[in-house]
Image (cartoon, rainbow, N blue to C red; front, side, top):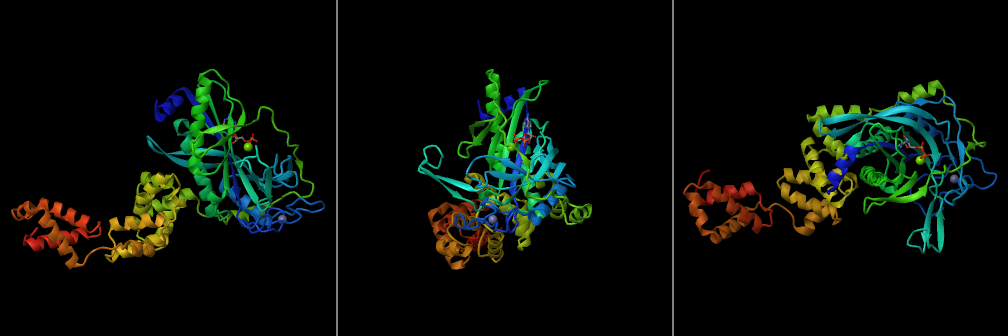
Length: 501
Ligand code: ADP
Ligand code: MG
Ligand code: ZN
């Protein structure tokens, strides 16, 4: 059975429910509860102080910018904002948090009861799915452990190294309510939701969401149930950190659970790990017994009590929401709903917009990102935005096309070089000698050679079989390694043979 039909048969028998818990690092200058730098990277344990190291006697202070970002995110997600809420200690013993607890929010989240509409292209065209938001709360990130001597895993490691630079970075966690009614589109809805969340964070300017740096992580909950039966037991696939992986994790977990249920086994409530290489999930830790984090209100921090005026003032700072922006761009670019949705799904919208802002025509910007670059991204199994080509590169190439120095075809070769890491646009052009051969002498010499190699063609053309010219143009393109201007070759050929088209 192919994967597609296996998936179809799951849909025929079961109804999926999904739930997403997304952690996003905020782009604040300093950490959540101290003034250490929140910048990514740095030598291990250089962005640390007594507070984020949890030394006795140190006192945390809430980062106002992080609260502001969370409220703005909550408002953008149509949430209610708590007029009073507290932080809570989540106690656990693991050395990624030097305090032995993480400061989070428990039963008093700052934002709650919102929704986000996402669009997915279905067989019946673009369709809107409303994803209800349970809560948006604040917490701090943990440090990073590196297990040495055990193939990177804790089992078999000889020792572990800790880096607390990330410990205390402000995080917001956005938790959805169970998402029902998505049927076969469950994987796409999950992906579209995370993409929309990411775009919203970027539009708000609260995080630049660099997924490759792990600044957005998703826990993907999935359960299946048969028609008319109560909801099934969910599994929670942890730390899925790319849009594509979110989609794949939902799909593969649906397939696995269906297999399990069909063979009469029950689904165990557990966390699972997603593997990029195979697209599969494997069992993690069982959640049958709820872990006891012994939450209690954080005694060292005052409650967060945003005034109504502050909230209203923050509401006025909200940017155009992505859905409204898409309608505006769709109209300004004169494209259909369907085309717009394909651009969004390809993750091309922001890239196209910045390419246009860099000075490239709308059409060319769309063409590059949805054509050549999408093809390469698919081939490499990565997101468009992970490709090392910039709007400035595209502008540079488009200028060379406009001046006749590059053809579309040669331009593709140039980008292939740039994307292969061979250097800048100019470096690739120079290194590979890529430019249009438009010098008449060189073209005429190539035409002559082609005609000599196919002696019957000249007669055919002269006798009116103009389509025979294609064989010569093709041969000249080959002789010039595709660098001839085809229209010019054609014109020169007819001129040479004294034929008018
Ligand atoms: P936990 O602390 O165990 O991760 P949370 O309440 O924080 O639990 O998050 C659980 C997530 O799973 C939420 O997004 C919720 O909507 C979702 N969820 C709850 N029940 C189901 C279910 N039966 N199937 C799929 N997802 C579910
Ligand atoms: Mg969870
Ligand atoms: Zn610190």
